[in-house]
Length: 125
Image 1 (cartoon, rainbow, N blue to C red):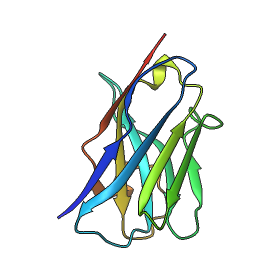
Image 2 (cartoon, rainbow, N blue to C red; image 1 turned 90 degrees about the horizontal axis):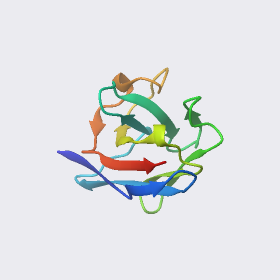
Image 3 (tube, rainbow, N blue to C red; image 1 turned 120 degrees about the horizontal axis):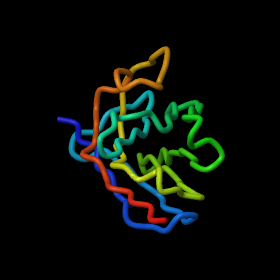
């Protein structure tokens, strides 16, 4: 069973920064792509960012472009999401996701097979 474990969430004031991390635990596998999604209270889960593991191609939601940066450390097998200039509307549970295969798009939840349990990010105004 593949598990993804997120860390780095917390409470931060508007304008502040946080860095989320995600790494596989237990059985590991070669990933083609990994991504971050988020779900705010009362809303559906939405795409935040994604990255292909070997090429490093990145994809971002318009709402986070220029503020968030997705990256990966191949040696540590770890995914990151650097979040700067945080806004109260960024408050959500952030989920890490991964998949072993190429997909035509990474903006959808259906592109990812493996998911973490989520980490809470709260931005106060």
